[in-house]
Length: 336
Image (tube, rainbow, N blue to C red):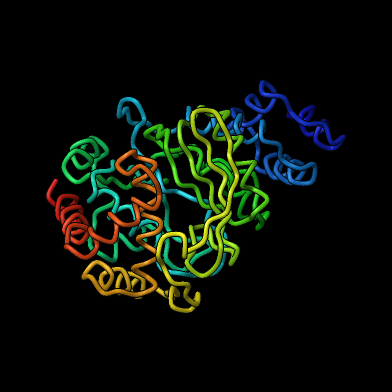
């Protein structure tokens, strides 16, 4: 490890084998905390490459408690977080709408770190059991179309890096790995990023990880979602090809809104906004959910385009099917 850190000091990028060895040592508990801290700080200072991210993600995947769901046609909605803008739990709400439309959603997530309400916080406040036996996940997915993959239950090797990360107190490569380490090996994903500069990077990393269809998104307002307050920058990976473009709320028949209409200071506030949208109340929150659910419906091939997906999502929100899917998930996680 000392030789690897020396390479980083000399601003030398680590090739796949060296990066794999380094992260494998760290996530196996073979490296002392001070050296892990030194490695992470020096890697940040050098600048993290796409190859280094993909190599580390592959190690993290190999260390996770994985679940085989077949061909990876299910969709993850896990993004980076880290925006600090504290809006309601859009990607979680959108996941249930997409599931109601026939998509299979395997959402990877955690409690809030940079936000006041992480996906896990919302689901627990809603009454879901996110700590249920992993053996029941397939059963829940088949019945409801949605499962939540609570990161600490699936990535237990992360315990070896937590002390160093906490001492550093800044983003490291491990902040970039969560969206690339779905325990069910999802090959389709809507992946929000906190920095516009990560759009192409994450598109290329997704390609290196052999993902099939990914939308990497960043709102011009800073959100790691497809936004209704401003334009959204998109990098789409599909069948090995990258395409970059911008979309506007108006492209989908939606009106722009002020970001304050999307704010939620607590998981309870977030749930209140989501429940109102699921009851059919038209609002910027409902539009935001529809837009992001539409992207998941497109990724899952239920819809032929994001626009068609948005139309279907609106229908599912207003006819009660999204609400029923949400309720069914909560009920089933408590009955198994």
